[in-house]
Length: 220
Ligand code: ADP
Ligand code: ADP
Image (cartoon, rainbow, N blue to C red; front, side, top):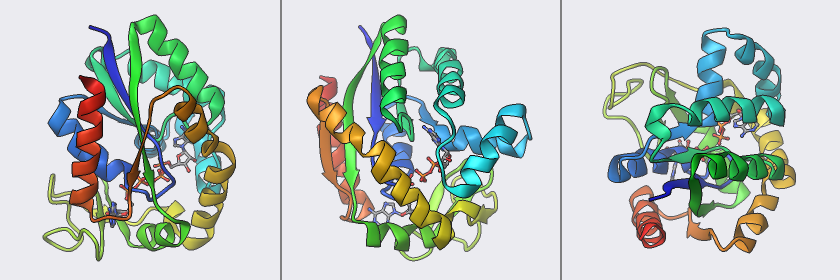
């Protein structure tokens, strides 16, 4: 059977990472987050990390060629052979075209694109209260989804921190970049019959239920 890829689409702070953590457990597919891979490279100060840093700090997109090469490398790992949950990639039409080509060569395909819709005002509130785990990238919110012990990840006990690019000045730029460069993918995937809009303003567990239902229907 062709391997199944799920692309999570939505503005910064919509809940892609939060939902991907649940989907990865339920579906047994790896969670591939382009943002996490960039941050990992930044931490290790690799050449890619150094190149990406300038863009990430400004809340801009890392250029397509670097991003596509990085995802190509990640999708070539054995754990992605059956499929994956893609979180944060693609973010431009050129990345979406490159993904379709890569998956075609691997004998895989995008099966469904859940689009998590959340209004801008709510995104700012979510990102300013987001706390991220240093080692595994697990995400919390100081009010909406607090960790059991303040400052510590429930999953792996590592320290939680606030991302540099979650400051209000950078967040408004990220939302603008999303509207200009990523939002056209809503129409792109809709025209391919793959888009499944989910109301992202509901509580986390309700978004999960709605998402699992649509995803499972598309994977049948
Ligand atoms: P968010 O929480 O907003 O979804 P991410 O963790 O996915 O943020 O991404 C953080 C930053 O990493 C982005 O602002 C961008 O600079 C870079 N980035 C992540 N994915 C991509 C991508 N597919 N294309 C270009 N840049 C990306
Ligand atoms: P993204 O990966 O799309 O940038 P995250 O999953 O990191 O988004 O979520 C952004 C912030 O919003 C986090 O602090 C998270 O705990 C919180 N959050 C996620 N989903 C919801 C929801 N349905 N309702 C309220 N807060 C949420």
